[in-house]
Image 1 (cartoon, rainbow, N blue to C red):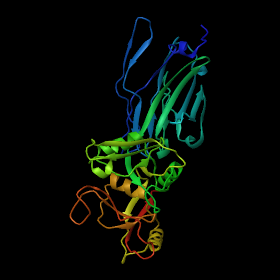
Image 2 (cartoon, helix red, strand yellow):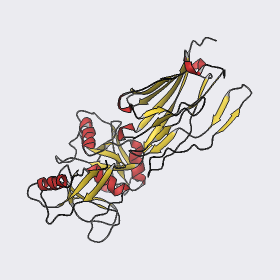
Image 3 (cartoon, rainbow, N blue to C red):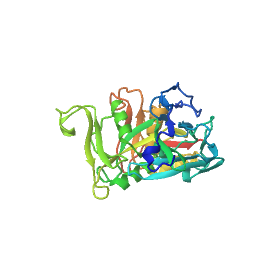
Length: 356
């Protein structure tokens, strides 16, 4: 039968999505959960399963799950085209991987990191290695045979931490592109609403509005108060909506994940100015740590140090996992001294050494 409309052909190819998981502490690819399949009187396959959603961390490996059932069963698998793309909020897509029989090709930043799992007939699942922060997002799996095709979405989530950020210039100085650049410079990406919401559920409370990756401006309030959107409002995410990306300026909410290295407080015989701090890290075979790296070390490596130290952006901070007297407050978190004078003020330093 010749299909004249795409919507009339959807019954020919059915995509099946499974949940797979990866332990945040290693690079092993996860295992499949149970899937229940039943048939109806029409002969079509009905699949009952959870939504396609996977979780890993930076540097990990993951399977983006996608299976399809084709009718008739005798269809030549060499003629079936499998295509993976990454979708964005602006309705743009980036090619990730395409396969037609034995011919397979990965694109751009995915070269050498992705390939088909190939676990029997109907498996279009994509293995992804050495996951990066930029890999976070929605992926479309499309199975095509001439005029017949079907698609489905798998969302790749990352374990990590959201941190608010503004540069030395002060608060509300970043347009959207500036915010993206600022997060990248601090070893992060602009956070998504889902990531900010999860951070709020874990207690993040921040009274300054910041850009998110979809171009909206929001901020999380756990303890309602007059100066943060009125004290009579319920706790939640305050939303300014979508703002002008070039003309309007706010802070940024950044997201970072597992480190491929270690952050540590470098012991020195005296306190240092900023220039000296940069040099002593370099002499020890490391680099001065970025803000995102300190947050990741605090969240993932449980770095707890009650000593203020310089970071790469010229700010001075220190991470507290176990709150205690004289260490700045009753809640865990990364304490900040702001941006002191780089030449005159003296502190310790946090360094980052990448794992080879």
